[in-house]
Length: 128
Image (cartoon, rainbow, N blue to C red):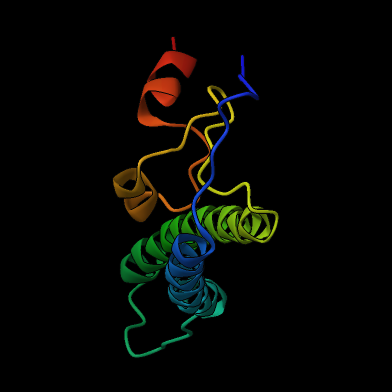
């Protein structure tokens, strides 16, 4: 339960620092997304080896790679959306406040997981 009497927030300067960090993470993630999407859409119709066995193995590998690239792209997409939601919390000046306890999430955690909405202890307790 959140105790609204003790809610504090990060200063505007601190929020600005986190905003820069998050914007950099978004740029990196979008670049990674482009790589995965390009790899996913690249069919690679190489006909240099016409061995049927090779073709079967190669096609199986391409399907596996496409599935993996698709999974990784979906994961990056979710990460980008979480980072963008964090930017909204910065604008609302609610960034860094644990949604379970109402206390500030330590800066160290936010630097590692900039989209975090729970303190480490709250996250651990949530899984129980």
